[in-house]
Image 1 (cartoon, rainbow, N blue to C red):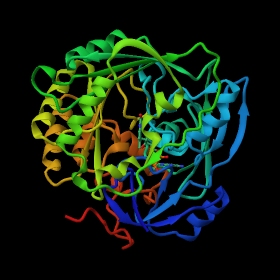
Image 2: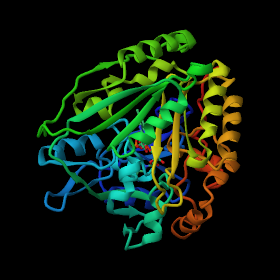
Image 3: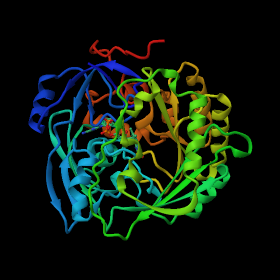
Image 4: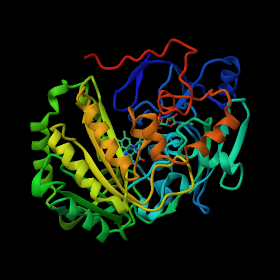
Length: 450
Ligand SMILES: Cc1cc2nc3c(=O)[nH]c(=O)nc-3n(C[C@H](O)[C@H](O)[C@H](O)COP(=O)(O)OP(=O)(O)OC[C@H]3O[C@@H](n4cnc5c(N)ncnc54)[C@H](O)[C@@H]3O)c2cc1C
């Protein structure tokens, strides 16, 4: 079947296997001794990290194993989505400490990318709240891993993009909360400098995120809205069931152009006047606004889009304005642009977050985009920054190795547990983490027709 990440670029032909249990997975591995695989969870990574000619889906590893309300922990299969976790834990007054911008991410995918939320400055990333997981290794054995048990493998798997083995189940720590409503305050930022000041000013709040208008230039460069959220005190532990609209097919690629995007940005900025007023929102509205439009990725057309998410270290924050200026000048403006402030890095060699700012830009696929992104790479890497692998579809090997200087530490662990590189993705081959595969012919790139 044809398979792609959330950005619909690249697309490949892949054989997809969906085992229903660890035992079935072990027997699949044993009977297919050649070639390599990559695991796929919710398919919400944007690029090619969950793509290969052979893909193992965690879809049916979707069981709950234990919930301990006193200890505030949940143990579940790696194919369980964060949305399913919320349904089980919210009525018990529990809440995941780290949530991304969509609830359709699986637990396995959340660990493999060590995902972050709007509160990295307070809670760190997903794996900082992970008690343990079990991992199916290339030789068919299963190991329990935690910060105390098989610690090297634990840290390499957290953020390791599925390259150390297949996570079968995991035990997560949750926060105890009295409400899942969010008091959301919004503040207008007249330009990037103002936006950075607001992020600093509200650094003590639980959740902080900024939306930026990347089409504005001159004095308005980087104008935006900063959202500041804290849990409400209304004792609300109600689940929210939203039935939203869905985009039924790929819209023509020209649908999102400079004109429509700038109209959207102007409307968005005036709707959200950003005077610091507080609105009480339900958790779905606050954390997962895009989930209310099913298949919104189709708005970018059949050729898909690329999301470009980078980290700029605190001391190099001036680079942010150079990136945004270059994007505005290029006329390839980003539809969704988000800025967050990160706290300190953790001990995982391939985890993305580190002290600084993370900027996320979406670009419709087109030939001329690639030289622009190469230019942005030079700015990011030149200031000690890096790219988020869960969003990446085109970074070079040298760009990856510069941005992730601990990559060799990761490779040492990988060589111990997977010496024949049975776990490999298109991304790992492109980034030089695994050799380029020649063992099967089924993964032909079915990239965009030009
Ligand atoms: C709308 C939207 C908003 C997002 N917002 C955020 C955000 O705020 N913060 C953030 O950090 N990310 C965000 N993301 C990205 C997303 O959280 C990550 O890409 C995450 O890894 C996706 O999980 P998945 O289950 O869909 O995994 P997939 O996309 O299927 O796979 C991602 C990686 O995880 C590996 N993997 C999956 N399951 C397993 C397993 N069981 N064992 C071993 N490896 C496995 C895959 O091999 C692959 O390398 C967002 C994505 C979307 C679409």
